[in-house]
Image (cartoon, rainbow, N blue to C red):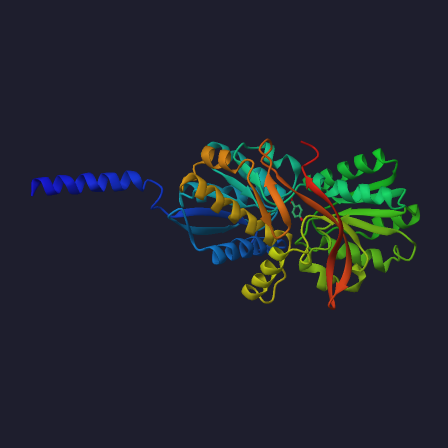
Length: 388
Ligand code: PHB
């Protein structure tokens, strides 16, 4: 009897040591804009992450994967911070993920450092975000990474003068800086530039000024998910900038699949550089987009959904390697240098910067089977964030 009890106690003790993490749920705390003007970013990140789980099973390395979502409402760093604090302290999550907009990622970075917790950025794209904590990894993109290729393309395709228009916050500043650098180094000339408010900008006066300046092209950046791109394109057409021969070039945030349909035919011919297109030509992307439409029939897969999907891929691959250990230092060390095929093409995590390395495609909006799409016709392989 006594021996039996002792044996049971030993067995329980061994069991609990062995299952220190293995038997616990793997909790991923997602800080997402689920309401407000950028709610689609949150919805897309979540859709992508959930699709990966649906396809690959809801447990990895013996741990059940549980997503816990907190709404940060968009441009509200204090709310993002509070949400992350609750996820860490109350929900006892293992990993933080999400982050639609740059201010949200900046606000949470110190908490990831303090808690030594992996923080996977699925959207926010200001270059310096990953320098704010050694626990940050990114599966989206950086603005310099996606901007340099369209500047190079412009300089090689007869565009000699450009006017830049960017949203006035982190990613817009990054886009402007990189465009000016790459374009002028290639011999191009910047004839003007404006930073527009992030909230409810009135583009009319800027557009008139650009029209009067008569550049060969206008380079535009605004975050996807809101109404900025839609409003800009509308104004560009209404004021006749296209008819005046001023081309529109942009990062692919402008012609994101989510808004292409709503923006309609005025998008035809818009040139962008970006890392994901719904019509990226690969077997994996075909099966991914088919699965996406099956899971979410009314939604289009886009760069945000693929970043959510790839973030989960990263989590699963890391946990398989660590035997279920998601502790910060181990997770980050294991993630560094990982490579895999994404629906967007081959990707990897730069071991030095924890940034995503990926192909950047030059695309043009065209109709494919009657649907507006970003058709890729050239690419630069394995692009790193050029500022690091
Ligand atoms: C950002 O806030 O960093 C951001 C969000 C959406 C984008 C690009 C950048 O499309």
